Length: 493
Image (cartoon, rainbow, N blue to C red; front, side, top):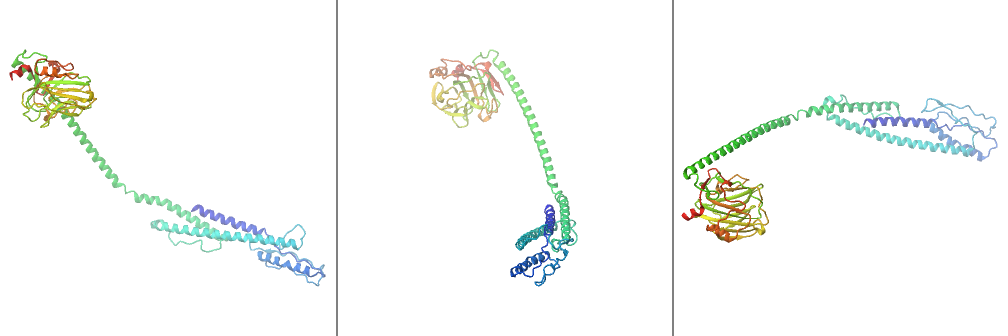
């Protein structure tokens, strides 16, 4: 708005100066009348009369106050007519006097030349008049624009506090006065300057007003956020404290459990020595592992690591003391990333199951009579073929049990418990209760004749991957190792 006002004022001044200069440069058309000779004919008189029309038009253009001089009567001689001296005329546009005659360095032409010159002057005057009308229309449009901007400024000021509004009524500086007067130009400049000052004042005070109105707003959210941060910090501290206490308790309970297991093992060993003497049984295979009650801490662990297997046969002697409520887990083998690599399990009233890599096959075996039974399980990765033997007889077979899956090495083999993680996290409901003896493992499938020989005690065999040796089996949590010859004990039973 500042730029528009200044541009309008400069344009008006330039336009008025150009009009004044153009009008001042137009010479006056009044010239002394020519003396007509006495013997002039009608054509000459008509020519002299015709020159008076343009002369009057030019005089009207300049608004001259005097006449062009006395006219020559037809009867008077031409020699007696002298041109009067030039009468100075005062122009309404300039304060300097103008000569009545147009200056010309050449001799006056004939009537046709004067007529052409007058027509040229009339065309120039008409062009100037059209230009003036166009400029006047443009000025009126600019005046309307200024009025509209002034109205908008007034509406903006009406929304401000009283301290920002000017006292006194607003004066419309565009309403009165002629547009070509110096007084109106000065008034226009004053109005533009006032508008500029008012806009600058509004621009300076509006940010302050916005800051005053918006400053108190964030106070409550800031306080709320700080309170929430404080509560979050307290909650985090509580959680960390609880985690530390839990870790300390877990570590303490684990240490206590290990100490109790060591003491129990020592006591059991001492009791076994006192009851049976040092020569009560002869290693490597004349012993059994007994788990008297169902819990999640009695078990035996095989100390030897298994290699990668593409087939296996696991054989053992089992006697269950569960009372018909599920035999639990005679053995389980877990590896990193897979807790159920090999599991033999009977849970609740479900039939006994063989799990390999979490794939399940149900086995038609039964151990619910509390007697010793010889159990053999064979499997091969080719087509997932499996076979289940009880007391030397083939009870069931199948295929597609974890086909083409090799048994992974470097796992943990546990007797009497099912592993939910590598080497631990036992579940008491899945624990085995009873006796385990002669657990052997081969890296191939045994023949039915070999299985039958071990079951009737005519062809004992030792596992080529894992033999049943005292030094390879360690009991924990109250599970006991005791001397036992399974074939003699079975015969006595």
